[in-house]
Amino acid sequence: MALLAIAPAGAWADAISDCGRSQNYDVVIRGCTELITKNPADANPYYNRGTAYLGRGLLDLAIADFGWAIQRNPKDAESHNNRGSAYMRKDQYERALQDYARVIELNPKDVLAWNNRGEAYEKLKKLDLALEAYNKAIELNPKFARAWKNRGDIYAAQGNREGASVEYRKALELDPGYKFAQDALKRMNLLWEPGK
Image (cartoon, rainbow, N blue to C red; front, side, top):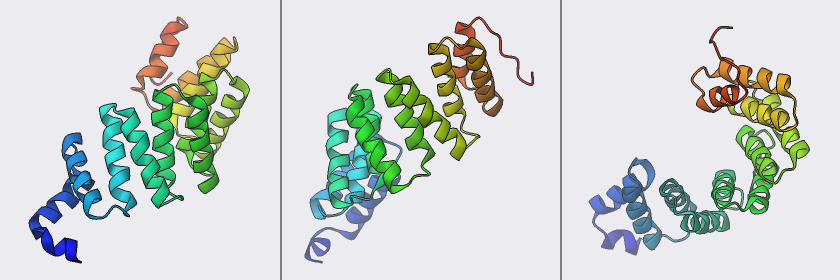
């Protein structure tokens, strides 16, 4: 309570608002840093600041903040998932897999974690494990276009042109503007016509 009494009420409210809702990364970082100095035990400002750092491409700072958030709340699946994404961007796929495994342990129905796990395995050239992860993501959410596109990438890498084409087309059926699936079909010299 003493800390709250020292800071003007308006400044505290601004920091809370900035840390939680702003679309400007610098504002989020500033607001969250202020909240962390006032209450370092709260995991949320670390998570929000980590997300802002991730958005700015400051991967080491993002990883550190997600780590602090996880220390304060070990069951925070989102912090694990986002830290895994930061590790992926640093080409540290094994470390990313550890975080995705924890997310899945916490929530076995987390579609994004299953998909992310597949992407990490794919980067490690463990295509069978990647395919298993994408299959699980699609089983959990058959409308998740990204997993269909990713499964198409596995089929393409395995030389299964027809299977890849089916997967890319399914991704585009779910999301007609999905550029990565469109580009994949173009690379295979196939055309995409919505509705066909």
